[in-house]
Image (tube, rainbow, N blue to C red; front, side, top):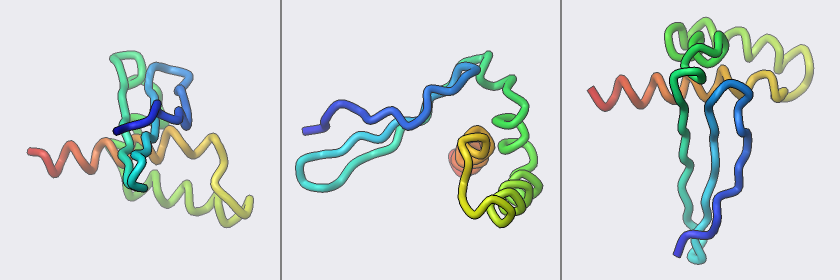
Length: 88
């Protein structure tokens, strides 16, 4: 049985990432986006240039000592692009 999802980020421009857990300790992550979400420059940059996007995130993480909420759209875009490429 899957519990109600825990929404990690509702995305300011039309995308959402959520995590659901099951009673046996497993779970799943779900990413959704709409046409407006696709236009978010950080989300789109993560999809179209994952290496450059990850380098920018790494530089911010090293400077700030952790992942910031500003990094979430980039990382979600990288994940979406990665899994879309694998599905082709």
